[in-house]
Image (tube, rainbow, N blue to C red; front, side, top):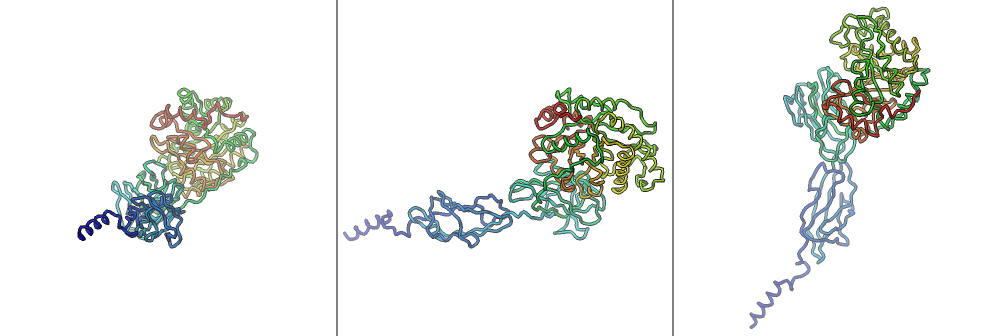
Length: 558
């Protein structure tokens, strides 16, 4: 009988009625967020610990983060930490045994985990990038970082970079190029952003630009344009704050015409608010592209650009009236007039302006007795005669000579920065002071390289800084990389214009990233009319945007 009683009691106890407090089932640990020993954790990462049942905190839980009492709360089956995470910092989380319990008092086991937040300053070695084409790791050049460097040749480099939060970062490229200037294309997250200029250097040199990167992992690809550049590493650093624009109050011409002042004040007041639309003459003197835009969209662009390309040639100074009539009509219809100059060989030996097709030597600008100097003066004087017609008609002109000089493909840039700057200043003095042309607004064309400042004639000779950017087919993304770089190089003192382009940046892209150019002007022909660059469909959207100024939206400037 005694044995039967003991058996029944044993069964009842096994049925849970005889458990003590310590025998209550505890919460079972499932996971931590982030995982233990994680690195490159983003700043907005939730820090938590998960359990298999609803939990409560012990009164004196003793949970710590980096040896400090943690701000923590139980939320259903999750332990949530309230932390302000810092870039580059490591965290050690300690949860003692019994700090976490269930409603029955069951004590969870101790948990400890650690993680490190992404640094906002990190180096990525080129030899650790993914290489395509015939790009190869080499060790021939001395002074490299890490285990080698990459000779790009005709290949590409793909970097995976991680940042703690979305925003602007400075990306620094350490490179060399056998003392030959190179350009290659930068793609970020499969979007082409910019061509990067790598100035000529015989040793390792750094180049940097600011990029918008999204929180977490981003793909940065250096794609071959010219190729044949050596890369040591890239570095990601916090971007410096860009100060606001502080545009020059007045034109550089001492006593500008009333109309030039009105136009400049309009450009200043409008800058950063809306984008002025433009069109390039197809045959240098006409409005074929502007008319094509109107015929296909019902909108005239606000700006028309003409070219003095054939006005100083071997067959003599042209006596053209077509451009004069078109300029006058455009101004009379409330349009903005811009004139550029593909300046043919002043010695009239070749009628060419490309460096490879003419031997004209701009360096003779330093010798007033040379034939070259005298030829340049003669051409400037001839051009002054045309420009004077517009002064007499009270027409202001956005005057853009000596464009794209730093590229070296035109004779005026073939001998470097010094003679080109001297020619700019000579032209300014000759047109403004000698010929008394006070209707010109001087537009100088820059690139985004570190050496751009070497080519700059100076604040007293330039009213507006333009950029000529041809991003490739169907590339309507923002050009903020170039915009921000040139703004920083020249400290925001001048209005910035997209003085020539292939594909126009979309309105949404410009206003999202802040590269709100004063005006944009696609080149003529296919660059305007072909869908792979712009075309009727794109221009219908662009020209009808309330953020784009067309000719019918221009104020009176007379």
